[in-house]
Length: 431
Ligand code: CMC
Image (cartoon, rainbow, N blue to C red; front, side, top):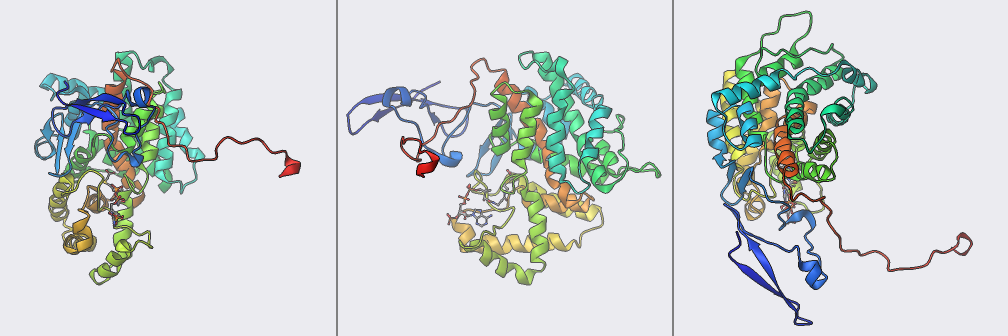
């Protein structure tokens, strides 16, 4: 695998060592520094993982300079146009596109695991009506471990598969229960005759006293948004799932940790923050004032939905979502959506601004997703929950890949200690 080698020299002692370069199939190679500590007594120092590959993976590839995103080698644009969410889930988890029989079996396994234990449902009564749904989601997902003791041996491939089916099937049911709890409406049981997104919409919006028919345009829009959010290589929440899972913790605990990491506004919480920001900006006339705030180092306001650690060019998902916004709003008869108009104008102005150009700050996946969620009736507080439902398949794929690797090790980073040197305890009377 290795072609190039690097020679590392300690300039103070002249001691040399050789570091191996590992090449992937695409993208930058990596310098293997595993022996650095043994040979030179040094650790690498890279806060925020700006230049660190934390693992080897075959699932997703991103070229941030070119705006490329591939799942198992297949461009996101092709998946968005030709595939559907459950097929993408199968691809991410199993590595190949499914045959007809394989997708049939997979869909059946997901559709027939949608119900949650009634005791789990009662957990929601312990939450205040105004609890944030992400808090309920992470808590209830972690609690799932209490129900499946007999099928949580992480070293058993069949147990891992059952876990994958269960979590992908049940997370929309848990999300819908959180939504209904906030509304004070009765929980709506899943319908296994509906496809994944139609069932989710049914559980969200149906009420026992009325007939609810899922709008196919809405279900299709949701399915596309889920494809676009399904995976994004070693992002903060996926790395959290891997780190938690590397301890041998049960997979529900690992996914719950991922949900918590996703919640932050620099990550999945940005979709909720974008809509709040657009509402705060209000009109196009206010855009220059808010851009000035975003550029002011003494102001912690950031243009939400802008910038990305990896993409220094257009986020390909944002390009697809922007086009989708036009279509979905037109199909739903909401073309004159003022927030969408404002977002388009904000993007146009920011992309001409030297500050954003110099720093290569482009709209990311979250800049437009909230506008679609809003248009299809999903409330702002549920936006990040939607992201979590979709990203669950990515988390599962990465967790499975890691656990199945015989070379897996617990993730245990080191540090540069800058605290006090050794000192003696001082008795209370002498302080
Ligand atoms: N508004 C204003 N300035 C920004 C922004 C922004 N949204 N993003 C980055 N910058 C500036 C930042 O101040 C810094 O400037 P300088 O070099 O003068 O100090 C420079 O651009 C580089 O920023 P950084 O914070 O060092 O970059 P990062 O890679 O650590 O952060 C980010 C990436 C996504 C956290 C950041 O761009 C951000 O906070 N964006 C807004 C939140 C957001 O939309 N997050 C969703 C990310 S996409 C969904 C997902 O994958 O989770």
